Every structure is written in C-alpha cells, then in structure tokens.
Image (cartoon, rainbow, N blue to C red):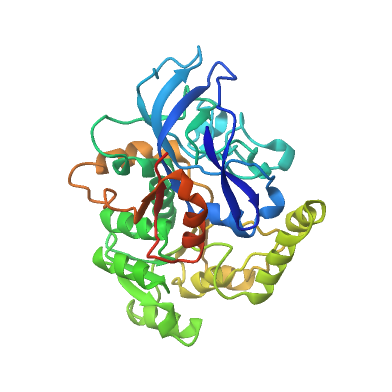
Amino acid sequence: MKAVTWQGKRDVRVEEVPDPRIEAPTDAVIRLTSSGLCGSDLHLYEVLTPFMTPGDILGHEPMGIVEEVGPQVTDLRPGDRVVVPFQISCGHCFMCSSGLQTQCETTQVTSEGMGAALFGYTRLYGAVPGAQAEYLRVPHADYGPIKVPQGPPDDRFVYLSDVLPTAWQAVAYAGVPRGGSVAVLGLGPIGDMACRVARALGAGRVFGVDLVPERLARARRRGVQTFDLRGFDSEKELVEAIRDETEGRGPDAVIDAVGTEAHGSAAARLVQQAAAVMPRKLGGPLAERFSVDRLAALYTAIDLVRRGGTLSLVGVYGGMADPMPMLTLFDKQIQMRMGQANVRRWSGEILPYLTDEDPLGVDDFATHRVPLSEAPHAYEMFQRKQEGAVKILFQP
C-alpha cells in the first residue's frame, strides 16, 4: 500500500510499504477514506525528529471502512464505517474506566515512561504505524473505533478522531462559566474548533488570538472577537487590550492552543533546532533530558487569565527543563489542566452536534482535501501557513 513516511527533518515521502494484517485477536484492518494532517504532525516534521525513525508512517486522524476483524472483535464487521481515536486504549483498565483513555494501563509505553500508545507518533508513544495511508491496523478494535452512519460525507465525522474531542476537552478543562469569557491563543484547527465549542456550550464572550489573516477571518465569521498579534508591539499591549474587554480583570479562562512551537522564545528555538539536526544517538538524549519549549504562549496565558481563573493547555508541550513562573501561578491562584484528549470520554457528548444543522461547522471545516501523493507539498504548505491552509484532509 501507499503511505506517508517520515525520512528526516522536513522530509516526508509517499512510499510503498507492506499492507497491514491482523496480528492479535482484538485487531481490525480498515481501508482509509479520510485522514487528517494535524498540527501535532508538524512537531514531528520540525522539532521532535530525535524520536523518529526513517520509514515511520505518519498520521493519527483516521476514518474508513472495516475490511477485516480479529475473532474477539464482536461489535464490528466488514463494511462498517468507523472513526478511529488517535490514542490506542483497551476500554477496561482502571484508567479507561476513569475516562482517562490517554493513560490506558494496557497500552502505556512504560519503556519510555509515557502514556497510552498513539498512532503515528514517535517511539515515545510506541512507534505504531500511522493513518496517512491506504490501510490501517487498529489494535484494541473491540473498544476504540466509533461507528458512524452511512450517508453524510466523511467531513461530518472524521474530526471525532482528534480535533473535536481535543477542542471539547480543552473547553471542558477550561471550566468556562455559562455566560463567562474565554480567550483562545492560536486559531489553528484545535483553537478554531475550541472557539466554536465554547460558543456552543454557552460561553458569553470568546476572544481569539493569532497572526495569520485567514485564521483570524475564519474565527470572526463564527462570532469570535479576534486580536491580531501583528497589531501589538508587545505581549503586554495584547493582554491590556483583552483586559479592557473584561472590566480590567482578564477572561475567566484561557486556552493555550499553540504549544511548543510558539512564536518568540528565540533561545528555546535554537535548542530545539540543535537537537533536531544532531545524530539521533546524541539528539535523542539531549531532547529527553534537557528539552526546552518555546513558552511564549503559555507566559501570555498566565499573564492574561484573571485571578482565580483557569488555564487549559491543549497545545503540545514536551520540555523537561522548562522555566515555569511558579510565583505568578501561585499568587494569582490559577488552576491549570492539560493533557492529550481522552477521545472516548467525550465522543458520546459530541455526536449529537454532528447533524445536518452542523452547529460546529464541521462540514466545511477543511480548507484543503488532497490525495496522499501530495503529502510532501501539504506538509510544507501547512508548516509555512501558506495558501490559506488551516485544516488538510488526505483522501487515500
């Protein structure tokens, strides 16, 4: 089959690889009909290269048709239409039963000290072959896949794999009071959807911050009050502008949807780039022990949120040596929640919103739909924020 493979920093290629097959009684094999390109994939493209191996198959936002199931998969059959969560979880361990599927005790990558295995996401998360391909082996298919109805286009449901539950959890963790205010830093796919979810769940005011014109325009069309970073000389000016809209206090909650590759933080960027270009035997240990994130967005969030408010971190961070402003966090009595989305925890709440009325705007959420053969260009376009690329779907 054809698949998108990682070959080095900013080097992805479409190659012929072996077809997946049933390897365990709870496996399934699905034929992919849509697969998303995620902002998290760009971390592999850019800063997490020490944890990748040439030939790794990328992608973790799959949807498709069941082709084959193992003997212990009793609720799926060939021909079923499914969305597959980006994490692999068993559904019956303590963590899964607690709604923490990203901490699944059955698939935890204990050799790396990490949580549940993920599709297509570095050796830290199990080096499981990913979903930007024609076919995908799905472990624990007796629990993970979400069956969806035939009929509507893939766009209606494919975001259940990652974008929707990630945005939903970000808003849930933010604890925005009904009628309250929330600021979302970063209006890429997750930040954009978080704004939509916040409005749907009753937030009174939603502020969105970015510097890409197309992203700002998309958010404004959905009723978000936007702030263009390019219009401010400093982070302090931005913070004051949003505080002026909230009686001088700051919003009740701030969602950081940017993460480790925030603009600014020049020194941290140099450390990331150094680790990425070193030989893997040197770059891996450096990144594991001394990795530093670009924390500009997080610092802004801490400054911006009102006293007693909540920070929800949904942008991916991976630093082990990050300088955290603990005095400010403590003094402002800030609550902070974070982590990978627990897809099956939220999917039942989200499905009622995926109707013909389309309150979350999923049907036209994608800006680009491309064949797998165009993956190298799609990665470059998305990484450079070119051609209005906000959300890209591969259609194998």
